[in-house]
Length: 117
Image (cartoon, rainbow, N blue to C red; front, side, top):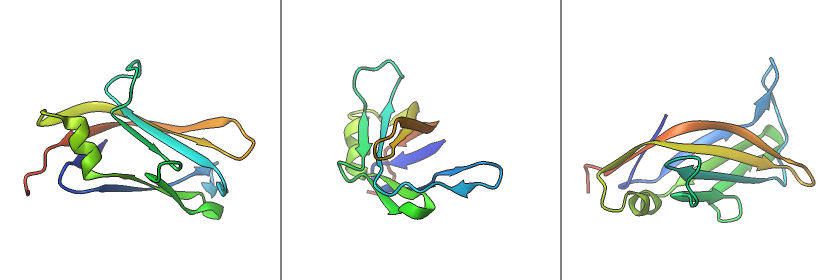
């Protein structure tokens, strides 16, 4: 579960690794997308994150490292007038240059109004 608030950005460091030895996969030049939705079948995401829009940054391509940042403004917009949204979904899809998309995983997300304003 990833928890985020509307009073501060949430930075999530990630690493793409495979196999028993957890060897890093080179992601240099790849594009990465992630979307947060209430349900998989929702037509539009609450939050759309990608290397194209700058919300996902490859920090060390050779070591398979990247960071996803969900801004406080994005959380606030997703919350609307709600105090909290829980049991949301996010998954991350990576496409290597000239390759097919690979789903790197899915988890649950919770968004809350921050206490400190």
